[in-house]
Length: 111
Image (cartoon, rainbow, N blue to C red; front, side, top):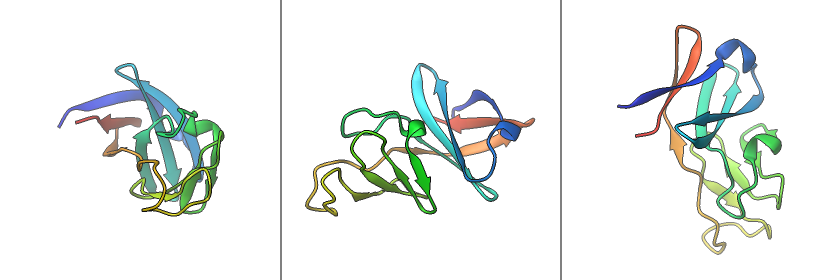
């Protein structure tokens, strides 16, 4: 595993919130639900919308540009920007990364 620091203290990522981080020049979406921590690619695979600027609704992240919805956990595409459920749509799911906390700071494994 190749753990990398996001430089984000866990204390700045409250339950039910999302934040953008840059790790090795790669945008990462970090989100926290209750006691679970998740990390995904930071931009929507449809047209590159910054997912941290989107909406977190219970078990999904919604892209701010066109409304594609992705499942939490896992990053699976739920509906594409036209509201089409897979497998008919053509938007891929989000890449997810393992996340952990070390010495109070969030780290991700980019593989």
